[in-house]
Length: 320
Image 1 (cartoon, rainbow, N blue to C red):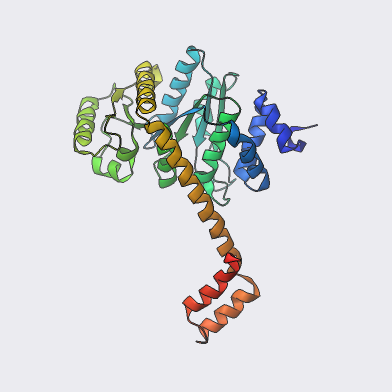
Image 2: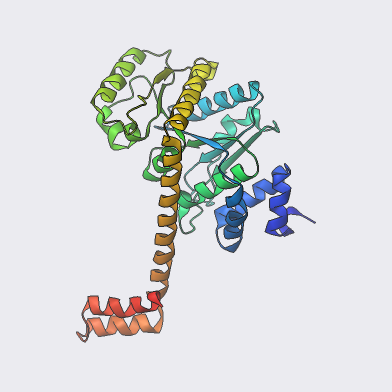
């Protein structure tokens, strides 16, 4: 029997036993949404809480994928298994993820200790902001202890997802441009570690100075941790061990002071709130159509009802 025809529960057990094809199929079902995705969430939720997530974000062209690939190599050199979620915008033609990240990480594609997956919104309700946590929960449930999240850009959704990792790495380049623009993108607020990639280029020292000055002026969310600034040349693997040491130091810090537990609890509260909002949004869409909607519109247009009264009547069906 092919993987596509297996029940979700069987796919889940195969994935927990190490079946990569079953895991890939489950992630596809999560991206698609619907009842199967809810079943996966129900199965995965009691088994989670062990994986540590590390988000890589920064401007396009900063070398995030190359740095992520180098980090994978460093982890594998230590015998650690790793999963990677590459958060991409949806292709306007296919609705799928742009696979540039897989091209850059192809040296790891045949390594059984590495699982790489591109994720896109695919247009369904909730998009990446809801599917990414579900995918991470699944990877956690099947035993992946280290999950790297790499984003293509610095749009609101990408920054939001990367910023909800346990440790967030913000990647910049020498001469990275207007610091105010970076601050507007939210990168300063979410960074636990800064990486100056391509640090062999001119301007690296000035970029470090700029970041230090910005940190001096910032109100840090975790006052016990000042984001370190690590220099790397990802194409040569330079500085990657230092980056990993910074990740481990941050992990030890936030475990010790309780910030990790607080962050994870806050993420779950935010996720629950977002799911409720999405479900209500869908129900609102459902009532804005059909005969009752047409009647209410006519009443408003002819002055028999004001818009607020009409909305109250329509919303009675949502409260039911």
